[in-house]
Image 1: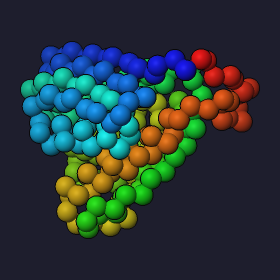
Image 2: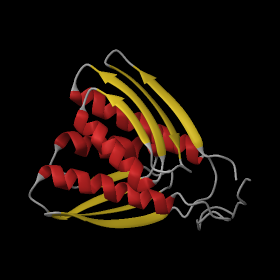
Image 3: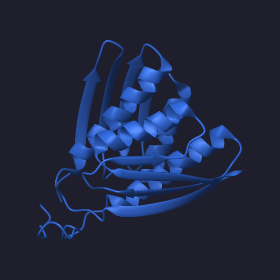
Image 4: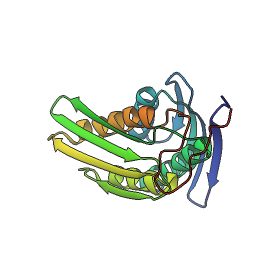
Length: 184
């Protein structure tokens, strides 16, 4: 199978973000950014998805940094997936202490995001990621009172669902398109 990898850079007046993403990885992340919580969430996403990622990100404030990292990560995922058929749809339910979060997604070029998140910055991250990757993403917080635990459980569940949904398959799962054969 062809290696599913993408390297994407976004440089604006406010940020400079580069992400190198390998889908057939071992869940290893090298993250250098100004926001330690964002770095922790990206490392968590990498581990639970099994994707390898190298992230270099600087920004003028947390909002711009988090938003642009999400946009670049979503763009890298979309580029790495190319047109290779995948399992496409997956869900993951993750407990973390007081938090219980479910993520359900569909890798299809119909971007949509319905996100429960107590932290407006990470609500924005998930929405920006979904829009730039072109996926349909639902995050449901079933319970939780510690915002850190809810956000972290969301990243774990997202990673776990992405691991399942990005698995290559022989044919395209769609009732709208004719089946296509996987490129090797």
